[in-house]
Image 1 (cartoon, each protein chain N blue to C red):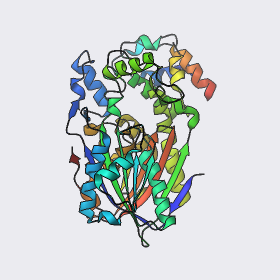
Image 2: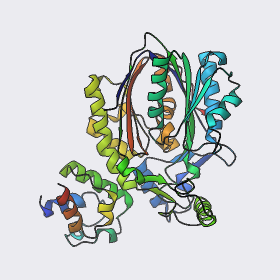
Image 3: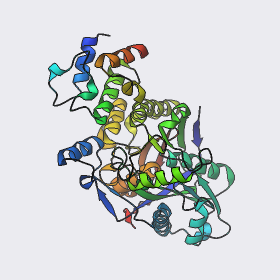
Image 4: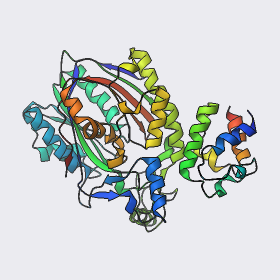
Length: 76
Length: 354
């Protein structure tokens, strides 16, 4: 599991945010476009791409994209 | 494993009734811009919902649905042996609402009453019980009513819940029939995650105090935001549960009873939100033209959403031709209740308004 690929998959869930905004250290909840609906897309993407079932707390307890990546990695 | 095969029971008809009062999601007070409302509508698939005005309960809706269904079937009230009611929103804390309905319908004393307390999987779950009883007991006819009015508990200021929930009441007629194809079920329970959909205060584990009762009423009226101490809906947990467990439980049902997914005419899913249902259908490799959606007009009507969708989206098809139907109610529990049944030109009147 590569963080680079995870960031790209994560970025795919957004429509309006510039691709350069997505980095390992990006605090994703501070992105203007972040919403509870994008959270659902991220959960679906993680289930599809990594066969990992994220829970609400995994998203709530992650600040950066890297935190979320680590949560997925721990469950993979 | 809770695989059930119920012989000799036929679903003879389904009817549904919604309140005539409509709440438009585009008009909700908490969206800052029209674009924000459109975004939520695009993702949930819900444009408007029918909601009970104060003074109307879901038993009023079920009663109207049941009367229409019994009339269309030509069933004498004296021929009905059992009346069942499944809701999370009873008329009174006691006595059970099936008795209220039994009285108002003028059913005979010879008809037994039974109530179920289930949320989103309510119709499928109650159907498994009622059909089992008919199959095993000698009962001939039963009417199962399922309805909820969750819009009233969603909280007027609750951005996560208010755009979702609509109210409705449904009635399903079941009859002993030696020629019926079996009704097949697979019901699973994931109670460890149950608190993802919970309403704690007011029961005996957390009886209302003056403070919590006031907070609950204020939350309903939209005067205070929803908080952990009153209602809880962890949308992300429920979404994860649905997109993983629903396809898996349906596949188990099909594998166990050798049902060919290709042969299914309709897959009727609990109407939670459009994005969730599309993800589930994609995982089952079933085109959306076989997965009718009623949530655009009616929202998430919890336990009643499966029979409501059959009536609102496919009444003609069910009346005119035999149908092979796969259904799944999922959520509250958490639980996932799947069933397969075949109907033959069943009675399915146009959706009613109260």
